[in-house]
Length: 311
Image 1 (cartoon, helix red, strand yellow):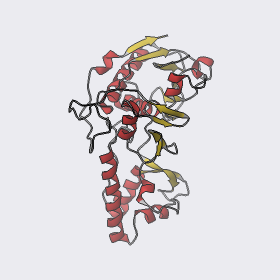
Image 2: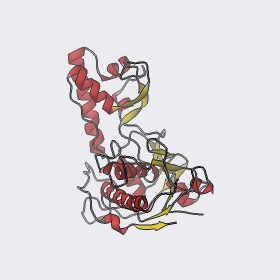
Image 3: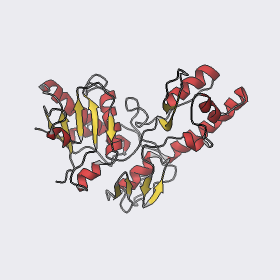
């Protein structure tokens, strides 16, 4: 059976107050998505089933699974929304696991921004932008953790007096930002890493890559590219060509724009087939406009177009 609406399961018997907040939370998540796609996508409909016990068959049939367990939000198998839509194998198990009280409740920006972040993974295929895919020991306590720009920022500023800015995107922090990255953002971020590395070398006699190795990072870091945001999948397939270290807007454009395709993780050649005119020149864009800058949002009120069905 094909599905295109979001199927949401509540893993306990939620009261009416929470269910009302939940609908409003998805309305606001829709507004964030409308913002970060510059008006080309929003959540049209959600089906919410209350009291679907975790582990039950109903639970396993849902795309978004709200849990009472204490956990961070997590998306299993990004881009697998399209397996549900296309019914590619008849038994879709990709999903979002989301704690019911993330940032307290669904009316908090951290909650609905976090949901928009996870839907960025699940629907649009875009990856996290708060780190690179290797481990290090930023606290030098023998505990290896994933490399993040937040920890790098703390070390640079506290130990070396060097300023550093994390990416200001919803895929870096859904509680703070409502835009996704552009190719220009990636170019500027790489330039910042290169500048910081030079400043560090002048101060300490070694660059950024060597610093990361000193804090337990892998010793095969031989390029600034290796510490750029890199997603959990090995690569994207954009128009059939493998790509990686790719800005979110490159990915979203390939998915949405007519005549281009996006794929990864066992889901290939997806084309939403939309007419895009991102630079408002009256002509359909066949490529992402050069130096594209995201439009200002959020667009309040869009969420009220969302149809919510409670089962």
